[in-house]
Length: 193
Image (tube, rainbow, N blue to C red; front, side, top):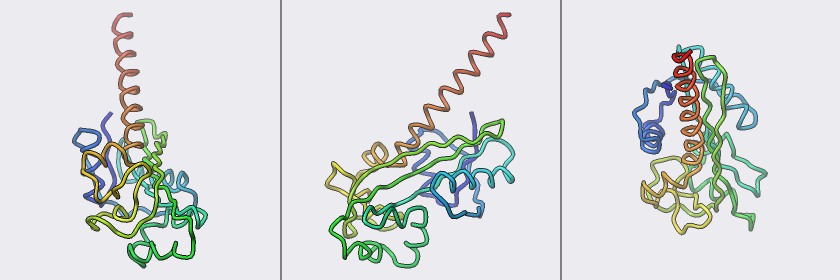
């Protein structure tokens, strides 16, 4: 199934294409972001994108959740990052011994019928002082559990296999394969009747 990925972030588009190993059409839209839990935010963004895109549409919403702060900044990471930067984010945890966090990525896909499907990837880790290139979101301060490198320090191949985004995209890819197989089987069955 072909879809249009709604994003203005070239890094997100590139990672999606590398992980899924396919070329994807994308457009940039300024979508409203409601307040709510991550699933509600992703769902609402997808429904808003449907108003502009004729046909299947995909949106992504990422969260960085600090356990010591009850999950904040969560879906608001984009604004926290813009206001306080990487060092400011790290300093939010200075009063706490718990530096654990999780990165979460949710893809919302509307299919040809307009039904929205959610695909969630989550990676647990620790918040550390910035290490590695700092040009892509919060990658430089998130060190996933079981690794000695931050997302920013990892090779592209390692990150594209282990990140929260990669986990969500694997679920999306499986869904697309199953959907494609389902429609192919229906087509073959209808031709033999």
